[in-house]
Length: 494
Ligand code: PNW
Image 1 (cartoon, rainbow, N blue to C red):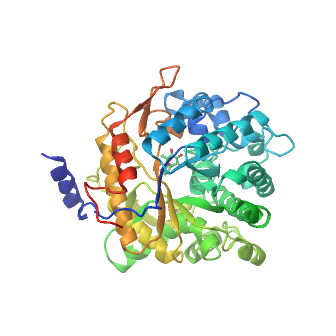
Image 2: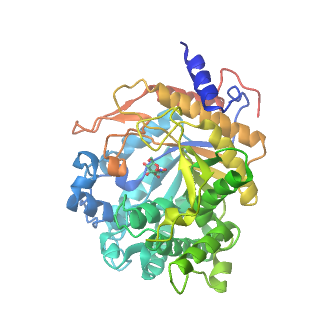
């Protein structure tokens, strides 16, 4: 059976039809690039004065939590091989490269009392190398690797972190801002808070769902706003960059078009994406979160809601702290209404109070959570446009995993083509998408999954001392897309 037929069968089987691949060119100024994150690629975990972070700590003290007891001690060794990484980007024709700064590499104590010059130089060199090759740096200030010393003071659930993050962000703007025009404060804060402090599936692996995840989020949003204002007041006029946050979500599709399932899906979207976006784009946590968590907290006998409240002053300080919107998208799931979950131990998931499932026949990947659902991209982009007042959207991650058994990564070629086609469809719908970032440039440390799930355009040989990078088939495909701005053989002009 030909590939087209297989794809068609799957689409029909899922009940979602997908049109042909969009044949309109992407605009000339649309940015195509790839992404990585510090802990996942850099290695050199204790070299040249870098401090310990929560991922160093977790992988060294609780190695059993990670598949294969893996860690990022060496990872892709990008700390030593950044020139090679930039050469790969150049070969791809990438317009931009999204990477993150390691807080403890720059400030080993977590605070500006001590600056690690060697660590700073690493990023200066990387940025210079990108510049020399006409590749725009898109810099994430925080991608999950909190200095361990700050975790020991309570980490994201303690209020002190807001000042600490603001100080760190200011150092980053001072050091790198002349050459960085696109900043992101946080990558996927939902993973930081929900996984890090709620269900414990990410460092620092704390399990206090329905309480600590909310506290963490509260401080992350305050930290984001503070960093945005610092940039706005102290750096924007001279550095002329743009700064925002990257939020991730699935597309949540209602089980059917009944009013109750539509409402359940919207509740899930608000608890997932709105939790972070609503205060920044519309003001305050989503109404449905405030109401549901207050009601359930009261039923639990608590005197106040487990969802912290912003003061009026904070609300106006936070509102509008975005110059664009960073969006990470991978997959979709189906949501349906369920009876109200019983009152008992607090849990973020009971607070949402909806059912979620993934149909068995959706095509999968090497990651259990990641089903291939390109149609969700277009729906999500349209929902974001409508819900957050039509922001400029930079897709800061999108990608798929395989198990590394072959360099012929057909799954990735199809994934990128079909998701990009839906991005282009959404642009036809009027959604302002300004860039697309493939996760990832190369295979890397996939958090608790170690090196078992491969997201790279380039294969990395983790057995070789050299960490040799080898192009997969998807490199040719992505190269062509970037060069032609087109997903099919010949495109209509944009
Ligand atoms: C993102 N989920 O994480 C991160 O930003 C990357 O660091 C990571 O390597 C990449 O996606 C691939 O996993 C996610 O369960 C992890 O829905 C898990 C989920 C989503 C994003």
